[in-house]
Length: 85
Ligand code: FES
Image (cartoon, rainbow, N blue to C red):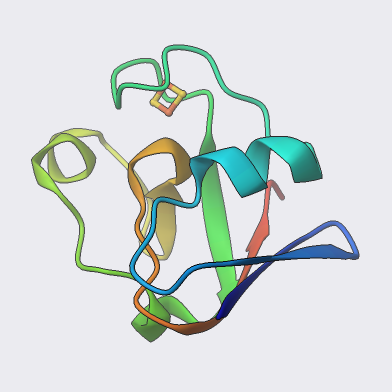
């Protein structure tokens, strides 16, 4: 199992799965859920190597280093913590 953390709460999810649903339950805001709007852009505070590499939509989005589109992320295993700061 893998763990997603956001604002002091956490959820366990299957290794290799999309983190969208768990992140939504933890309160990460979403818009399009399709890598277009940027609403879900968040900083990875912990565990960036536990995520799969950025997909094409993330690469095309103009993001600061360390940020990811949560709607597009899949976790490999381990723990990942996001922040909207
Ligand atoms: S919700 Fe629109 S880019 Fe993630």
